[in-house]
Amino acid sequence: MSLYTDRPFGVAANAPNLTFDTMKPPKVVSFDCAQTLLEVDWSIKRYVADLCAYAEFPIPLEGPAIYESMYNSRLSDYVRVNMTRDHVKCEAWWVTLGEDWLREIGMDLAFA
Image (cartoon, rainbow, N blue to C red):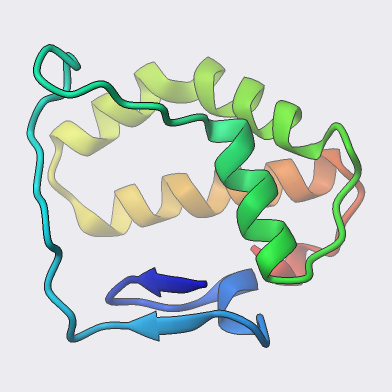
């Protein structure tokens, strides 16, 4: 699996079967947030499960559903933080979510 990112870190950085494309430009960019032009089949649970599987990071079966629930319950707070355009605060929000999720599923916080 190839992950397009400018900052490989955390679980993904230690995954033996993930490669990182940092120079490859995206083929398609969509700003269709309301999904009026594109049909998007994106699932937080599936993304978390797939990424953890590719990273060979063992999580409990209910781990992806717990992450999705935590993400959804905090989304309004993320929108508020994101509107500040403060990258440090946005990164801290994601780290906190990751740490809280790892704690909830009984995993080591070093993976956050």
